[in-house]
Image 1 (tube, rainbow, N blue to C red):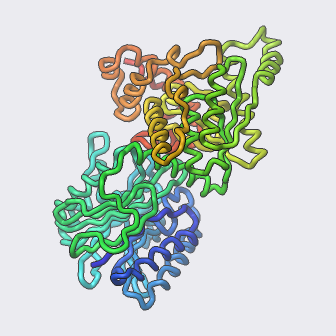
Image 2: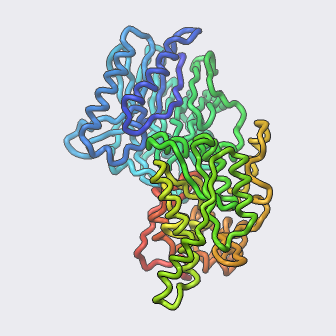
Image 3: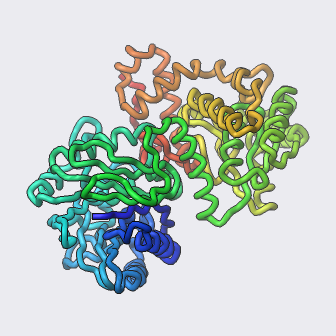
Length: 561
């Protein structure tokens, strides 16, 4: 059976555009030079976009879904190509949640098969059990020549472990074995994490070995708020070997023949060799920026350029995402800023070709420091440092209002973790592109972006001096990050162990040293800052934001023995 894979980027709530994306893929599936495909596969909740969150509380989401499915049904009239598409469905039972996460097969003008999702994840960024009622049975669809079982994303992850334990008491794969399918299809909206592709493919290969038939996995691409979707769809042969995969973070279309277990015909966006993980992550960050702006109907980005590594990387990513003409760099030197900071910022802007202005804050700072400190015998050192950051935030937000732009924040995960950032200062903004990227990896990204530019015949955008100088906030004379923090390689390794691996303090101290106690205290003290931070593009197993819900007002100390 010839099957078309539509790796598309649905937008949450944009039913008309999502139907248009599906219709475009359907036209390609029908007009294949070697003959029409029997089935077009579209991702999980492709009709509504994923995740719809509390939009599911609105009753009209069902009527809009019905109208979209009706449009898709009309496409199939008189055609031999069916559509398998993910959508929001009604729960037919009188009790339980009103919605189900469904896949339906649409053939010759009507829905001929529907399967609801069985396993509803509630970990990390997921909260599906809040909205959906799970399936009570699993069925197979008879295509006329093959017996096909449809899984929806998490349904094939029931045997996986999170934090050392299985999350579900039942595994749909056990039922799939008994259904004896000729083909297993997974429609997914699976978020990206660094290195997840290999785990995803090996997990699905284990499923194939149990079920004993080929498997096709179709994932969406794009980004919804802070959640990135990498696509990276693939097909596995019945012996669990990889038949081929599609490119990450780009829409793609491909034809897979389940009889010969090979990709055929028009295969746009095939990626046969494993991609470099750092390259994929950078593509993801670029996608996250571009999709956030596109889906919020903004065009222009503004950010502060300090001459440091973080703002340089964010500027380079934003330039690739939005185009240099749509990224506005602002240098805001104070009396503590070094000369090389300004020249590095100017060089970066020139290399990237983006508009650039210098707006000093020292006069604002002197006036504010004098006015607010006069009645108090002078402001404290920390208040003066944060005042500078807040004046920069004020400048950026005012210019953003003037130009109708969004501010990009430039903080990295290491700094955000320990509170080395200023609330309403450098944390001001609409999106945090590198807030889930540790400082050591920020340097890796910077070097890789320079390599990309050289391969493209361009000048390396990030100056060598930015790459080699010691990191500094430059909020007081002679200030360096390492005066307040451990060296970043040590800090980052410890942050992974506490934020992602959840090691207790006793193990952290054995592994890293007694200094971890102070870092744990800083992480806990600054939870209130992170709750008010801009959305952070998620690229790790545990990002700050939607998938990490730690109370602010608490009597809990990880740093306590």
